[in-house]
Image (cartoon, rainbow, N blue to C red; front, side, top):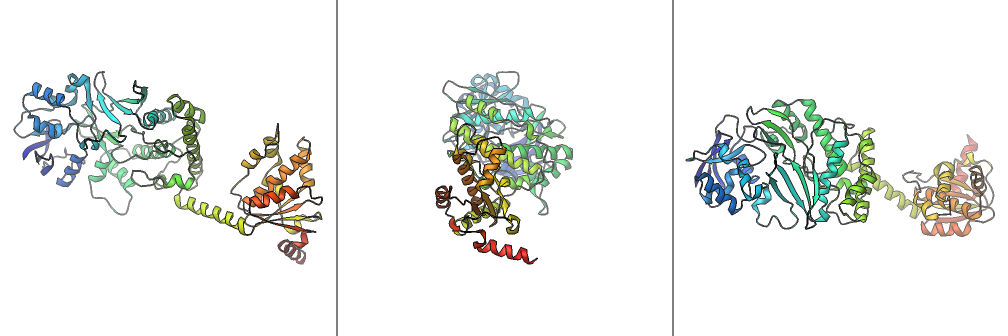
Length: 546
């Protein structure tokens, strides 16, 4: 066992005992002066949590250099926890019998060690195999005036590093005062990509993660953790509008880039290390686990699938996070990167075209949802599943019930039967645009409108009227073009859950209609007149009786 003081700079804020064999904390007594972690509210359980999240993997050369220069620390003790030093705050542990001061051990003194490179502290450092299996190598570079964090990304084409640059582009383009960390990226000789950013902490400024804020007090069940995090920041002196705006902005930008790793250690607040006053939200950082970096599929996600993806934050899904956003327009959609910008950024990094296409398609779905959110609609997994179920029901109805009725006798009074005018369902201008140089049925059918929810309604199609539409649009109504328009409108109606009445007295489209009916599992029926269609005949009778 070994006794230590838990220090904040040169202020003792607690007394703890460490098992020298395991490196675990055995006991802790807080000094009660408000300097300890968790905003001054620490006990044994909290300090154990804090200790587990904090370690610096040390090299033997670093340890020996420290022993040589300070002559007061045993190799075993320093190896156990490296005095719990961190680049992001001013906490450390001092052996009880030692006369060490903070200036003796702070990281800036390591510039002479290992070419100025110091390993980055994180929880994975406890695992000697942490560098295997895709973990990014991280270290602090002290060779410049300002310490620089360097993260190497080799798996997934180095996309995690590229994602940091992409997030920087988003933040730079937004007209906002929300703080963010600026990243750059560089290729290495071993085909990895390094992301670099300057430290936003120093001897006078430290980072307090959201986790410590949340754990600093017993929380109420009447409010969400998201809301109580904001309340606690305000309670400790921060401006409500600033912290709320920051959370709104961070939540929305994380949603846009599909960041799945905004856990409570990945954002927080800045504190003055001398006055212990909270100053402002910490700059947004660590956006590498975004833009579907580890996905190996090529087909775009549905809206339901996107919202089902698990995230690490106050909630496990994005829709829950979105529900807490107050200012939904704090992110300007018109300033977000375009398809070309995304293609250029990821293409320049050697990301395969197929993966870039996958990234863009899902990004654009997110932009569509953002637009809906900013228009006042609620984005929720429940609603999306409901819509998806309705669409499945429509398709199921199509298979079982939807029908195409071909009549020989033209309809004189269409209004009597309450049928839809298909001019508005699939405009002829859209069809002609797809067939500008040659008749391209594939393109025409790919543009079929969806989510019309016709729910069994009847749509009327007449060959003669389609010919008139084509003429009025300045084109020649040749037979192939007319048949293509007929097929497109039949497919549109059936796909959206409706029924078709086709006026084709000369049987020009019979062959094509047979193929459409078979491909869409629709019933195909032939009649002399519209009165032979039971549903429509009844509608006509009801109309006459009024």
